[in-house]
Image (cartoon, rainbow, N blue to C red; front, side):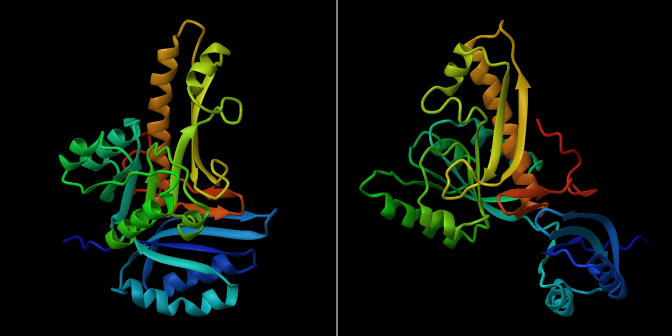
Length: 298
């Protein structure tokens, strides 16, 4: 009879110091943990070290016991460390305005189990997708946002996030700029998606502008939200090639597809603890075995 063990993971970020990898591996081994996957990166430019390990506790140690026993290593190497259960779904709030392609794509991936998250609510400043969301048995919150009442609207949004226990907020084409205060409060916990024409084609109808300029590559960028709007640390990007024979409508359609795929991959990386913020950029480790049957979503 095969014994099934929990699937745990450990994230570590610390100054680059000799011996940290050996200390972590030795600790897990001495506590009856079998490492199934490991990824690490030593950034010579920033002097920071990043590591993510998947492992099975074969002698019955709980996450709390492992966290407690790991404290001396945290103190010795001045490390930030997080133990978590890889099978536990993270609670997520989606925010959307009037472009629904990313929302619909995420709902589909969630429904078929391709995106292992717990969507605990959808917030919008319009009613367009109320029926779609409610039909998925997900709470829908319409919060109108005006210039005069923006602080009150954001306070309501934050209350929903806190009451739901959401660990991540995803801007699935939510077209309102978040305040500096909200960005600071949710630092590293808000993911956005946008086209990759910035800074060339700003404002309305960027795909029309790209078509008129004969752009040959359409791309999308997903990043953490900061007070610098679309300049937060990048998590995921992709492109699709277009030709002179394609129409402006083709540009829009292809752009929506690549935006949906990039956002889903960014969320998948975040919820599995594969993303580390490293100054103004990120370290993103590849998926560990078993975390997802295939990362080629879409």
